[in-house]
Amino acid sequence: MMTSLLVPPRAAERSGWPTAAATLTVDHTAFAHNLGVMRRVSGVDVLAVVKANGFGLGAVPLARTAAASGATALGVATIDEAIALRTAGLTLPILAWLPHPGADLATALRLQIDIACGTEEMLTAVAATATVVGVKARVHLEADTGMHRGGASPLEWPELCRAAARLERAGTVRVVGVWSHLANPGHPHWSAVANQVDAFTLALGSAYASGLQPEHHHIASSGAALAHPRTRFTLVRAGAGLYGIEPVEGHEFGLRPVVRVAARIVQVKRVRAGSAVGYGAGHVTQDATTLAVVPIGYADGVPRSLANTGEVSVGGIRCRIVGAVSMDQIVVDLGTGPAAAAVAGDEIVLIGDPQAGEPSLAEVAQWAGTIPQEILTGLGDRFARVHEGAQNVA
Ligand SMILES: *Cc1c(COP(=O)(O)O)cnc(C)c1O
Image (cartoon, rainbow, N blue to C red; front, side, top):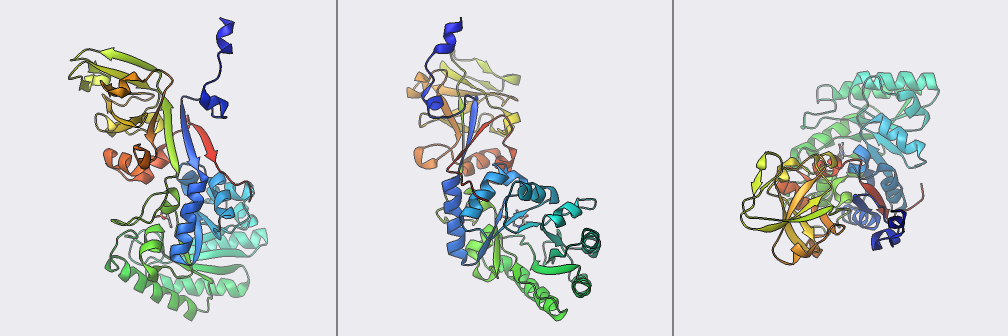
């Protein structure tokens, strides 16, 4: 009937919330707070890491908030991610640290994007493109100080520096940074990072000996920035901490949760004891109980490993996910207590505020046997995405 369209909107819709089945809310005030913690504790410039679409939460809006909250640079992995930020109007220096052969270096250089070079091949490609485009390339040379991932090894490093110095004299390149990455940034003990910091200090010395004068020296990511003063140099690259992930084992720095994931119950049903739930009958109810169907599944980033393990909050009450996680839905056991009074349309929280009894991001990751970063970057495209407190400046 047409009149059914005239029912009064629910409270959430009245306050401007979307009508989608599930909502992902990003708290920009918390993100700005976390950036403040990172700046205060480290005492140096903070490059805000917004790779992988801002850990899955939205690179452009979070980069704007970072810029408005004191970040001095932005960092991403790929050239394309950097181009997207610049094209969206972000004016801070942007570092792309994982340029690949065949990447659109010309556009990146035209857009004044800083490019990391850990090999002579990449440095040569960047310099050649800079000549064609007619700009001076800004590069950050990457040293491998012991992680054995990217960057020049100690054997390759002196020659990379000499090549860069030649290109500086030729006027095609300016080395603005020397950097490396730590294998154990969140380990609370200095011994876990000391060797790499020593190797980095040697690499810096060798860069200066080649005639380079990089203004930025950086090796710390969030964990080291907070826990290890001697890793801070001139700049720290902060990702995890900004997103509310406490990066140092056994320590809390008062970082606030940034993400909230909620969905509306689509159906509630009473079942008898012995009812098999979901694909493969992955759970059989012990007693008569009440089940809720929630429209969010592994396609939305709910790990299948949460089956019979993970919990959600129903009005502040913890309830278990029972049976297999499907592509689009999960089933939650509301039990026989007050949660069983929930009705279709009520909100359940998958990731929220532990202070309010809701599952924290860290808890969800633990249930899933993974790290919070993998949960965040796995959140799918079907959510209505709400950016609370977003700053609209470049
Ligand atoms: C992801 C990343 C960071 C940020 O690390 P967090 O632990 O998330 O702070 C810094 N530098 C590089 C090179 C990275 O890949």
